[in-house]
Image 1: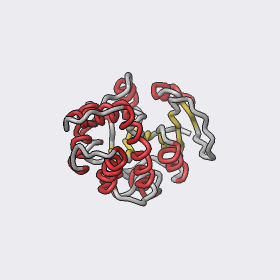
Image 2: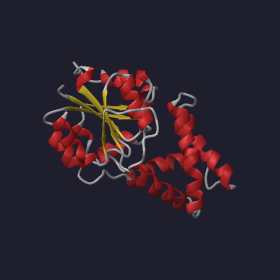
Image 3: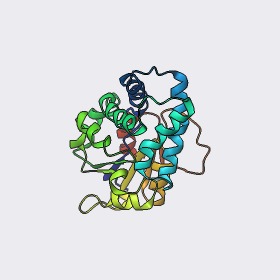
Image 4: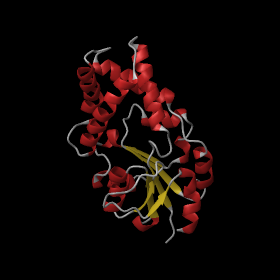
Length: 231
């Protein structure tokens, strides 16, 4: 088997979403002159997670997700620093500004680019994903960028992977394509269902107690080129 195409997830795979989202969250409260706190952030995290799960399962739209997660947060904390739609817009702007790639990622992509076709597959929002990649000077590494918010389907939906797989002319076969991502359910399960090879980035070292079994597992994204040599 010769891997020819790499489908990279973006958030928490190539880009440090966790730190950026936290910083953007704090900054947005500051922008509206309301103090943030660990308690407020801790309240937001499960609310946000559940809305993304609902989105990935097709239960809500991306438009609703943008606003409702903050509306639900403000209801939970008992005050509203801004209208949810305004807070959401500012948060997404801050998320772009606060985003950084992981150390060594761009150098890794530079080495891989001559030998592989590479795509970004992301469930992020359109105001964020392409602007972030542009800000980080990463867009040119990829032959295609597929954003769920732009196509109306989200990972792990097979329709998302159908569009992603066919987003370049004459794509390599499925057996010659590998998905690399940190999320077992959206990245790995989606890739498995579509018949692609999968590599799970398990940076936290957590135990996989699911029935989702990736073909490969790494603990740091910079391990991926060495893995490719062994496949």
